[in-house]
Length: 357
Image 1 (cartoon, rainbow, N blue to C red):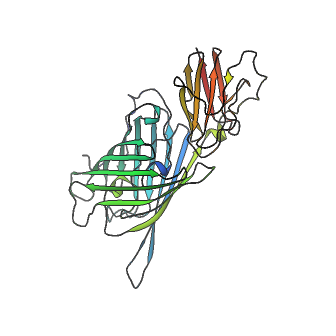
Image 2: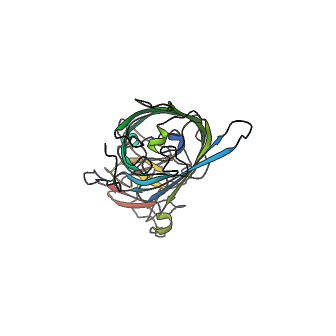
Image 3: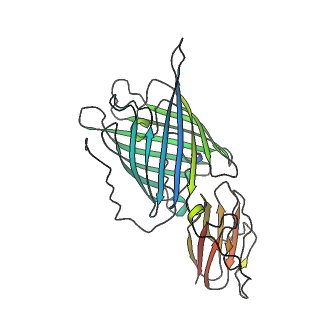
């Protein structure tokens, strides 16, 4: 394992076709596990993580340790970004902690894979070394199980590497409320290092893309290094997620709807679907996938996996699902071959395309 280095160098050449990625919502992950998510292309992710510790009596001093995540979703299911923690315990020479990382998620359960899967590589300035993680997750009903293997540079002056194993579970009680917990441990812990753990309540803020985690943990921050090393101190804190869809401010606007074409696709009632229907998702202010090819006579069903209502509306006025509320579905049966660009009426920066053969 390399101990010294300059900047993170990521080799991203051998990557498959671009596809949209999963959500950053804290209802799908745990406080110390990312859960193999990467952001959709053109979306910036700003996560504000704040953890507090209290000293012993009689002082009872409250110390805060904020951590910031800033990352950008790129094509081909890639996320590039960094963590900045204002308080680090890895090395006395680095009171702050920077982790630069890149993540690639080739597997997405919502798009047909049996599991979600991702690999991550990064450089931690406080540990002065390269770190890596392979993570997997699988959803079964309201339960999502997560696991990860981490290879970490050993902080300090000694050369070598540490291996950490982590597992967690996220349980959705309702659409807006969930529970989450995880554990992680180095395979060989040093004096003072303990099994890392976290547990908390996850909340989705209705009608917004934001989520909030209220949790307790014995780790200092969310980098691979710090989230793998438990301490003897319990911290309480929160994490607030803020995705920013750049096309909302810089993308093309949808054209005004034209009069319906004489031979238009046939819209069916929202939620109607047959066994031969094609499934798609509306989430993170993104149509997933953005381009769908179907045979004439096929039905496409869009499920709204976010917290905000959307529509699937043809640019030329040939079809419109109407508002699809959070958790609902909208379906269109396409009976005429052609290419049908579409958008979301309340959010016209959201765009996609149907190709009917």
